[in-house]
Length: 326
Image (cartoon, rainbow, N blue to C red; front, side, top):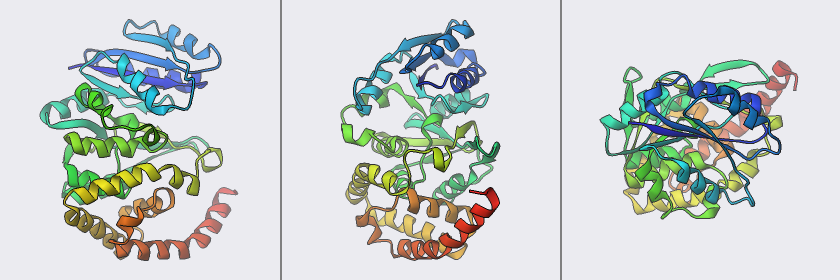
């Protein structure tokens, strides 16, 4: 079992070097090839790739002519030759064992379209790394799993409910079957690939199979500072609308009563304990990826949680400004 690892990059040679090095810590026998797809405006990234001198590492110059994210994704998948495919963002990095564990999980669960993993979050401005356990706690609560289990399986209803609450597998931890990526092209539309690809992949995997999730953190994800991010608040919610609309449609077509019941149960847990990991996930989701109106009408607890968060926000903002001098 081997995977093609695709690393798209643009003008971040130092981060690219770290990403490539992290892939090279994986079991060599699990790697079919590593392809760096470079859309940079200079040759620094090409020099980084050449410096590794690794037989399985190759460089591809990629010139994106327009903002057609779907075409770019199709081009990436066409490059893959392995039975499995993974895309690692150039500012994230893997821990040793991610590829082997993900391939093992997919081997144990042949019905799964893709495998994701828990991860650590790293914020450059603060220089700290923290475990991203909150979303994993929500996921385990949803599926009735235990933190001691090495992996859990999410079926269709679990995935759809999780996506509605922004509980999704991060893109840089996904290892996908080639058969899954080949079927994607029959489903996807260009407007869906502008933003929110993590949630989109998880949701579409629900239609084509299931998702297996490694509960041990196997990657570190670069969390961009708020002041450096070009996509914030209302703008992010606006860009995520096509995926949110498709998700609401899929839930309506499925056994929506069971999915809505799961969403309501998670919100009730958040209302019962506002300091819990589940509450943190749902508060963050309301800010960046609010619940679709069709779903919001069926989840009265959502408005209650939103009202509570609105009351707390001014005080929390003042505390953050004092602590971080922003």
